[in-house]
Image (cartoon, rainbow, N blue to C red):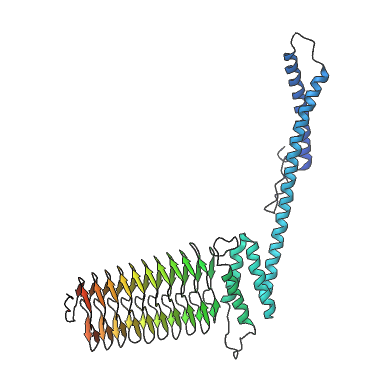
Length: 447
């Protein structure tokens, strides 16, 4: 008996219902309809006879009419159920057709991306990006393919054997396609909640202007190589997301984060190598976010934080190795935030925090080594902030606090060591600030 009522083969399509055999369904339906008709006839007979007790017996035709009417209603309901089931089958077939079409589009776009002709590869880029818009279930897969293309070996020098004509335009088109889908997190085709993996990729340009990285998203540029060109993140928004440049190699060009906004997000340049590149964080806004250059090696180039606004954020240069180059926080505003240079080795180059404003924040140079470097705090205002140079070692460098003003803050030079270094306190204004002068002559408060 178990074999007689066994269902048909299980459907391989995810949208196809698992149906009973037709002969079995028809037999069961006839039995059920016959039983229902007999039951309805008997029930109607009993009911009508009871209602006409003591009167003329109920005509059999009346009983049949009632039975037929009820059966007609039941038939109408069953017909509706059948139509609904048929619609489900048709929708399942439509979904399978759509899935097949999407899979074919994916295969074609992937084939185009591997073509020898740059024009065909460009068509593949647009096809894959459009497919990601139309296929939310596999959107991350399409994004991964485009990112994987950028991770492939790329020769930027036209004189080298591996150079491909038109390859730069293909790669810039991929970046533009990604950028265009990172603009509006509320868009149904937005990629702002997805992951972008550019690990080890080579960049000689690219525009991510206005890109938005929200909670749960990330852009991984770790171990990437940046040479020449401009990689732009102007007006970008990192809100709970993460942009990772750890161990990246910057040997030229410009990385532009000017006017970017960071809130509860993270930008990581730890252990990166910089030689001749320029970083612009002009007028960027950091609120509760973190930017890390921990243990980075800076042998040239410029880090420009002029006019930046830091509120409860953290910019860390802990353990950084600076020789030549410039780190500039001029006119920056610090509110409850921290700029950390502890254990940094500054044996050249220039660090500027002049004309800035520190209110409740902290600039930490504890255990740092200054050898031939210039650190400029001139015209800086410290309000309830802390500047720490405890255990710092000054040799042959220059640290300037000229025209700086300290109000209710703390400056700590405890256990600092000075040999052949110039530390300038010309026209410093001290008003109710806690000063631990260490090796330096105490400057009395201004009355």
